[in-house]
Image (cartoon, rainbow over all chains, first blue to last red; front, top):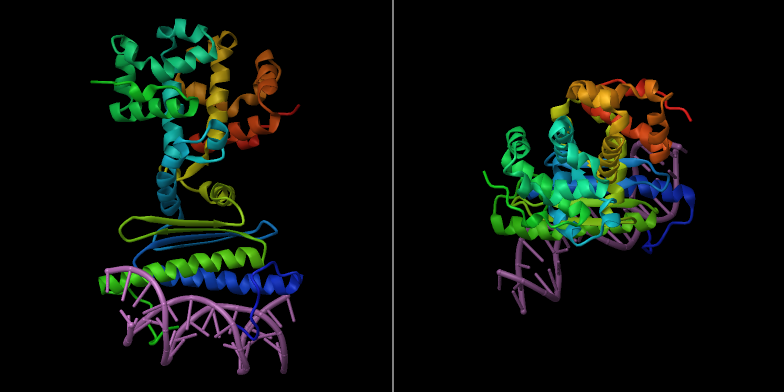
Length: 175
Length: 175
DNA sequence: TCACCTATTTATAATTT
DNA sequence: TAAATTATAAATAGGTG
């Protein structure tokens, strides 16, 4: 849609590439805006220029919510990937805070965790991942359950399981 | 660009809205692809339909890298927001793992942290956030510095600071 | 560099199959 | 319904000031 048909390949001339980048970028964002209004949808457009500059647009909802939606959908795909692959991807900060908080809780309960804390990191990971069941009968388990809502605790344990490849999925943490 | 000019407002007829959604969504993603090739850029498009279904496209780079770029840029804006707001946003899982690992490291160095570990959670947070400077002269600081790359440690400390509202930004952790 | 211009291509709304 | 067609609106490539 111009005086000449252009092949879709890198524009070699730097200044016309810059002009085209600016024009088409604006066009793309305008198209996103229209689609979001016409069809009641939420659209995020992120453009990173060759020089690394970021241009973004969020229509119909805010950027974080749209990316959140992507993360939720994407989480399933992550299941199949290994840890190295996972590290290139994301978790909600909320979950991070919960995990940090749960680790923190474990630390604050250290007097009851003496044995566990003296073992190796691998053992500790296993504890956080897979031994919740056995802790149920102890005061520690009681305290942890009181500290975090049951469902969230289970999710955190499962998250650790996913990260470290354990089998917490099979744990039940009943009330 | 059709038989009639259309106003940019919600299409009331459900089936024509669906048809337009499908056509324009494809058009948008194709435009993104072209722009990324023509101008050597990376473009992410996330579309969430009214019914909540997600459509995504990443051109020029993978989705995670593009969103990562957004997160890095966006981090500055987050500074001004409170924790509740922050929890609706994201951190790379990589950073999560580093933080968990750093907490883990702190735990494994517990014999040197006896005093710190016996204080309250608030005190502990303060330690992790703001007291790195004072730790520099101790063996603990040495071990931490050896355990994690310097730059990453600083970033983690700053991240804790951002989360808990401390002032680790002012800390220097020199080698 | 930066708007504006406009010939032309491209996208798409309505229609047909 | 859904895919293909077609008439038209919209986007934009190259040009101009």
